[in-house]
Structures are given as structure tokens and as C-alpha cells.
Image 1 (cartoon, rainbow, N blue to C red):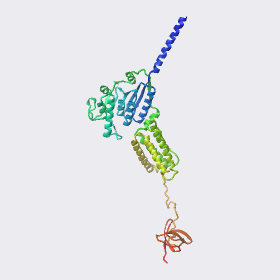
Image 2 (cartoon, helix red, strand yellow):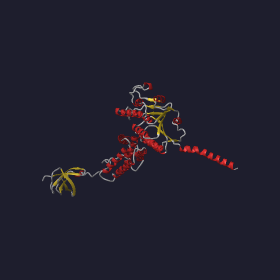
Image 3 (cartoon, rainbow, N blue to C red):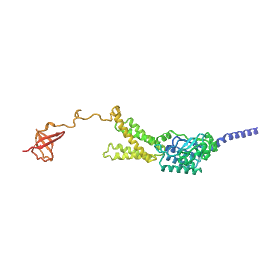
Length: 438
């Protein structure tokens, strides 16, 4: 009986250990973080990736997988992301799940290894300006050097990275003759040594990296991240500032606080919120903006215009500080001012007569004499009458006409008191007299 009881206890202990060991092993294994690199590359993406990598460090991750699917984007944002990856101690791999073009190719090259799906593409990394043309030679030279440097850093043949950014490199064997940018297919990238393997899905990447048993942490963009990425887009920034300036200007000319003011204020709040979440703006820029608004409001009650000037300067400075590129933010502000001015002119000229809202903004009634408005009495009946000066005229003075004291002026000369004068002209409240000869 005792022997059977001991055997039962031993079996129970083995069962408990067998159940707990996988759980303990799984709990002790380091996680793998998967960070999506989707859509356009901009400062909002940098902020999102920075938070993801920081979390991976805190959780002791053994691998970070960048799931890349992007047509490219801002060069300066790609440079910051590349620097972020270089400073990360955790191993990083780029899983190109469709395309990694332009800035996306540069980011992928900063990973410790690259994996591509069979139909993936990587390359076409020339710098394009705002008009869609090739950038100037200075910018091209910088980007060519950056692509070369990151390839050399990863032990890759730099001529392929250079060919992605420079169309003057002749690589006909990779379908990139002189005059064309190099864009690798997954097969070509594998042959050139840029890709470690061609895979079908993320599970294959984890198997290649021997972490298929590790827990996976999929980073997802929150609504805050999505809003930040949207409002920090170089195209969206001038639109937001234009809506803000146009809405607030319209609000100044309409009574109360209505739709234009709400749109303007919401645009500004979105602008600062997005730049704060993206890590571009600090609270000092928001504080400067609030101070500027207070000064502008104070201008309504203080004379001199100094408070208004300082307020406008503070608001402008806060917007410039909120952006990563002061030059582009200045251009965006200029665009917003031009659009707001043109919008006001268009709305007043075209819609002013048709919309009740604009009728409240435009003074349509003229204060003419024909309409019954009289600014002052016109004493035209006094012309030709004779009076006696009661004070010397130098050249203004007082004259008594038919028992009525009148303020008058001479034609420019001096007239003593108690002299006879004749009224020769009346212009509104201005009465002109001339001395009569004795």
C-alpha cells in the first residue's frame, strides 16, 4: 500500500513538472518584435519605430523584424531611421513583403539581414524633389554617398547600392543599363548577396533566424500614430495651416464663434498634436503658441500694436519650431498665407452677394447724401451775408452774422476784430470770409 502510494506521488510530480516545463521555457524565451514599415516614410514613421524599438529593448527581445512595404518618402526621415537601427544592439532583419523602394531600400540596407518574398522589389532610390523631378547634384551626391556607405557597412558590394541611386551606373545584366535606376527582384537580390533568402511568409523568416519557437509581438499603429503620420506629411502640413489661417481670418469678420473658427482651431490642434506624437514638437512650441494667442487677444484691449506684433511673432515661431525642417515649415506658412488671402478675395468677390454668411461681413449700405445720411449741416444759405468779426482772424476766428456766432476762416490773411466781412464760401462746416473795404 505504501509502495503504491509512493509510486502515485512520484507519477504526480512528473506530470506536474511535464506540464510546467514548457510554460516556464516559453516564459523565459525572448520575444521577437515585428514592426511594420508601411506606406510613405516620414517623421511620423520614425516616431513609431523609435517607440517600438524602445519597447523591444525593455522586453529583452532577441530579434526585431521590419516588415517592409513602402514606396519611399522623405530622405531626412530615412536617415534618422537608419541611424536608429545602427544604434540598436538587438539584431534586426528586413522582411520585404512587397516593395522597398527609394527610402525603403535605404532603411532595409540598415538591417542586419534582408529577406524578400518571391515577387518583391528593392531599389529605385533616387532623390525626387517636390515637383517630381530629380533633385540637384548636391542632394544626389549626398544620397549616392549614403547608399554606398550603408552597403559597405553591411559588407555588401556598394556598386549595386550606388546603381539604385545613380542612373549613370551601367548594369545591363540586372536590367539596369546606363540611364536607368537599379531595382532588384528577389532573385537578383539573392544573386548579388543583398538578400539572405527568398521566403514566402514571416514564419519562414523566423525559421531562417532560428527563433520560430519564440513568442511574437506584433507592433500595431495606434490611432494616435496614424494621425501623427498623416498630419506630418509634407503635403498635409500646408493644407492644415491654410485651413487654420483661412478659418481664423473668416472668424474675425463674423460675430460670435462659428464654423470657420472651429475649423481653424481644429486644424491648429491637429497640427500640434500630430507633431507632438511624432516627436517633432516639444511642449515649448505649444507654450509659445499659447503665449502668442494670449498676446493677440490682448491686442484687442491694449493700444499701440506691440502686443499684436509680439503675438503674431510668437505664433509663427511656435509653428516653425514644431516642424523638423524650418525651411519647409517657412514655405508651408507662406503657402498658407497666400491661400488664405486668395481664398478671402475669392469668397468675398464671388460668393459675397449670394451667401448670407458673407453678407454679414461686407458693408453694403453707402452713407451718401442721397440715402439720407448727413455728416454735418451744410450752411450754404450763409454765402453772401455780411458779419462783424468778434475776434482777430489768424486766420481762424469768430464772426457774428444776423445775431449768430460762427467759427470761420479767412482766405489766408489777417483780419482784426470789429471788422466787416463777407461770407464767400461754405464747405460743410468750413466757412470762409473776406474783409470788406471801408
